[in-house]
Figure (tube, rainbow, N blue to C red):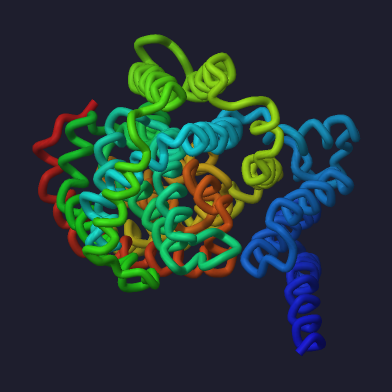
Amino acid sequence: MDKKLDYTFYFKLLTPIVLGFLLYGISQLNGGWGLSSNAWLYASIFFALIVGLILEPIPSALIGVIAITVAALFKVGPVGSGAENAAIKPAVAVNWAISGFSNSVVWLIFIAFTIGIGVNKTGLGKRLALAIVAKLGNSTLGLGYAIAIVDGILAPFIPSNAARSGGTVYPIVSAISTMFDSTPDKNPHKIGSYLIWIGVATCCVSSSIFLTGQAPNPLALSLLQKQGVQVVDWTGWLIAFAPVGVILFLITPLLCYIIYPPEIKGSSEVVAWANQERAKLGKISRGEIFMVLICLIGLILWVGGSIFAINATTTAFVVIVLMFATKVIDWQDFLSNKPAWNTLMWFGTLVAMAAGLKNVGYLDWAGNILKQYLVNLDTFWAMIILLLSFSIFRYCFASGTAFVTAMIAIFATIAHAVPNLNVVETMLILCLPMGFMGIITPYGTGCSPLWYGSHYIKGPTFFKLGAIFAIIFMAIYIVVGIPWIKYILPSLTLH
C-alpha cells in the first residue's frame, strides 16, 4: 500500500515537469510555429503549473512559488521577455515575479479570510448560521438556496464577488459546517464541501446576472467602447441575460445537490436543535454588535464605492482596522490565519504568472492563429468558436480582471476580421458568461481562491466540478441565451 501511494505521489510530481519539457521540446523541433523560444519556455512553465495544480502532488501555493521561481531564474515573464535573445535584467525578473502581491484583488481575498475570523470569533457567524438553519434546515437543499439568495441580493450592489463572498456568505457557510462537525480534515463531505461548492457556483452565477455582479463586467464594456464597439447599459445587461440568469439561479443549488451531494439531508430534528442552540446564545453580545456595525460600514462603502471614491480593497482594510480597534480580533488572530496566508502566496504567484502569458506574446500569437481559422466560416459557427475559445482561455488567468484586460481587445479585433459578423452582438454574447465561467478553475475569479482556500474541496475535485458545471452552464447559455440575445438586442439601448 505504501509503495502504491509513493508511486502515485511521484507520478503526480513528475508528470507536470515531463509534460512541460515535452511541450518545449516539440515546439523547438517544429521551429516554434512563429513564436520565440523564450515565449515557448514560459508557456511550458505555465502549462506545467496548470497540470501541477490539477494533480496537486504538493500544496497549490508551493506549486505557484516553484513556477514563478523557475520563470524568474530563466528571466521569462516580464514585458519584452518573449523576444528572441531578450536581455532581461535580474532585478526586472524578480520585480515581475512579486508583482502579483501588489494586486488589490489578491489583498481583498486575503482580508476576506480575516473578516471571516471576526464573524466567527464574536459568535455572530454562529448566530446567523443558526437562524438560517432554523428557517431552512429541514433540508440541506434549502440551505443551498439560502446561500444563493443571500449572494443574489448582494450581487447588484457589491461589484467584488470576493468581497461579498468573504464578507457575508463564507463566514456563514463556515459556521454551519463547523456546527455539524464537518471540517476540511474531518467529515468534509458531511455538509461542508457541499456548502462550499454551493458558495462558489451561486456566486459565479450572480456575477453574470448583473453588470455590477463582478468588476470585470463593466471593465469589459469600457474596453470595448475604446475599441469602437457599442455596448449595453446596466438594464440592457440584465435583460440580455435574464432568461439564462433565472434558469441558472433556480437550478444551481439543485445541480450541486445532485452532482456533489452532502451526507446530511436535513430533518426536523436539525431545526429543533438549531432553535435550542439559538436560545443558549442569549442576547447579542458587545462583540457581535461591533461586528454587525463594522460589516454595515463595509457594506455601505462597498456599495457606494464610486460615490465615496473608495476602492473595494481599501474598504476591506478599513474593516480590518475597525476590527482591531474594537478588539473583535487581535494581532495573534491575524498572524495565525493560515488559510489566508496560504491563499495570499498562491494567488499572488498566479496573478504574475497569468500576466506573463501576455507579456511574452503568447496570447497575441494564439489569437492570430484563431483568426486565420474563422475568416472563412459561417458567421454563426464563427461566433460559437469565439465564445468557446474566449471561455476556455479562462484556464490561463488568475483573475477575471486580468483575463478581460488581456483578452477582450484581442477577441474584438478577431470579431472585426470575420466577414459579415455582427461585432456588437458577438461581443455581448462573449461578455455575458464571464461571471459563470469563473467556475472553471479554483483561481479564475475573485471569489474562487477564498472558497478553494477553505480546503474542503481538493484541487482535482475542484477542477472536475468546475469543468462539469461550466459545460452545463454553457450548454444552457447557448441553447437559451444566444437566441434570446439575437431577438432582444435590436430593442436594447446601446452606447
